[in-house]
Amino acid sequence: MKSMCTAGITIALSLAIYSCHNGSSSKPAGENKAPANIIAATFKTADGWGYTVYVNDKIFIKQSLIPVIEGNKSFANQEDANKLATLVVNKLKHQEKPIIRLDELQQLGIVAK
Image (cartoon, rainbow, N blue to C red; front, top):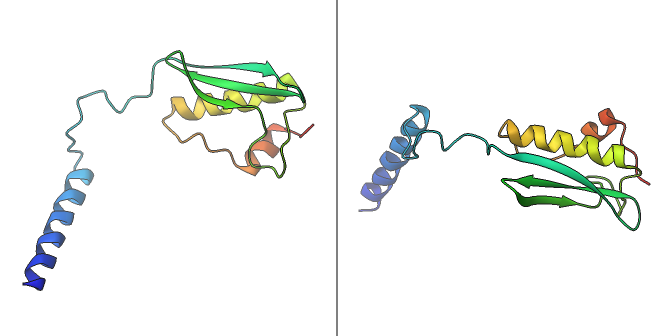
């Protein structure tokens, strides 16, 4: 009985993997597209600058601290906040996760205040 159950699970998983690789999907056409309206705006904080990313006119990310770095540090200036906001918007438009890496901060020349 146990081997029949395991075989059933294996077949179910194989079918699921096959349908994913075959491009079959139960989602309607166009559902995998990035949202049409993704914008960002910077804002002043008590200690520096931050940014907000809006998706379809709703707040998606509100970032008042520089991600990835140790401690609670605001962006030193509006330009730095805008640089990172632009990177996040571009990632979202390309259907990437808006995860920021330390090397990306370094490439953008972003420093903590």
